[in-house]
Amino acid sequence: MSAASVQSDSAVPALRVEGAWKSFGPNPVLRGIDLELAQHEVVCLIGASGSGKSTLLRCINLLEPVDAGRIYLQREELTAPGIDVNRVRRRIGIVFQAFNLFPHMTVLANVTLAPRKALGLSEREARERAVALLDRFGLGDKRDDYPDRLSGGQQQRVAIVRALAMEPDLLLLDEITSALDPELVAEVLNVIRELARAGMTMLIATHEMGFARDIASRVCFLDAGVILEQGLPGEMFSHPREARTQQFLQRIVEAGRL
Amino acid sequence: MSAFRGGRLDQGELVALRQAGLPPAGRRRDRTALRSTLVALLSTVVFFGVVGWIVVHAPGWPAVQRSFLNGTVWAQSAPDIVPAFSVNVELFCIAEVFILVLALILAVLRSLPGPVLFPLRLLATIYADFFRAVPGVLIIYLLGFGIPGLQINGVPNSPFFYAVVSLTLVYSAYVSEVYRAGIQSVHPSQDAAARSLGLTQFQALRYVVLPQAVRRVIPPLLNDFIGLQKDTVLVSYIGVVEIFRQSQIDEAATFNFTPYIVTALVFLVITVPLARFVDVLIARDRRRFLAGAR
Image 1 (cartoon, rainbow over the protein chains, first blue to last red):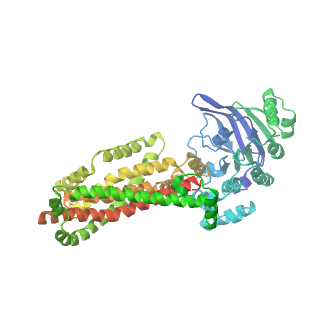
Image 2 (image 1 turned 60 degrees about the vertical axis):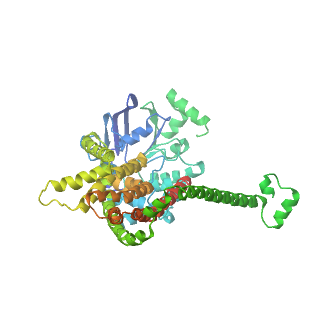
Image 3 (image 1 turned 30 degrees about the vertical axis):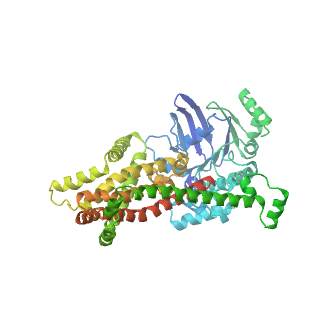
């Protein structure tokens, strides 16, 4: 999407995580994660709560520092000492479970803030970019509303648009439908489907197995801080190899989520 | 009447109420409200009547009346005293601007993360502790007499200047705590969202955290300003002729305390509406909060 990704060599992975470790106090959360995403790939992270999905995403976005291991965004090592975290974060979008829109700003101000302040776009450029994205995702008539006037689904779509307005090379989605009423989930997932079609590279932590099977080029099962198993969604969901994966998917099926 | 009996309405009464065009419950509620108002009015009148009777029948009342509520002195001193209040207003307005700015800087310093900035946090904390611990009137005395006493060239010696400085130092310590509570009330996920978009720490504070924090603390800020409004009289101690000093001058000239009553009334007239305004703001905030809005 952005100039950087157009110039980049498509043979270079969009994201590479090598042996990432992270502990909170005495509790290890990530215990040696290795993961690679090709350009335009959509990878879903599945696994029980506490398996490390959210922490992995937060580490990639440098909201949490890893204790050991390396993370590369294309050719650049994000874990190198002295790296400018603000510059890195401008290239990686993240959308949170709880939307985290800025409640004191209109939808348009939410979307234009970072392009203006972090990318240095003019008021007009930022506005044009924001309006185009809001229109594309059916939020054009909401631009002057405050977030508390919107439904959860609309708020989450605005949060996605806010991340996209930075034209990131990579988008991280952290259980973005978990806080939504069931009837609002589809509108958000459709946005992600459209992004996948448009070639956005995405790493998605999700509990929506049907969605993962549908959209992912690859599914990774996280268990106790390691990627225990990964593969094509069709194979993973129908013939999981590991006992833990089978157990997890069994519970999902019982809960009626697959 | 049935409402006073407190029992159920019989069939005949219900028909009568319906004919009067009022639902029984609504009419009973109106009655209850009316009765509450009457009871409140009556008990107020009785209470203040009794207090007033005791005061005016006290043995010393005629003397007190002469020295505190003297019509002649009132007429003489009010034209001196009321204009002197403009000095208090001026003090208040100038100090308030400095307080809002200095307190915000202090609050931000105390909210900065990271071990490197520990000395700044420490200094800001010591400042807040010191100026909240020492009585304001002492600060006014020490600065107002002490610094001009050093006789350094170019250092101002106007009492008004030190009045503004002292009030700013003391009140910014309190107000910084109010700001800080506001900053802490903004959920960390707001900061995380701002930082994840590539905004710097300062930008996240400036555009995301502070606007939300300040909005939440406007009622307690106004509350502190009611206190500041009254504490402007403390600067009379270093020779600023403001409303209280003027009433002391008039008291000394007439050997009568009526000027103080005039001064007290001026403050009541200014401060009570401000206090009610703060109540309205707090009530509005509460309603918004309960409605789940911003």
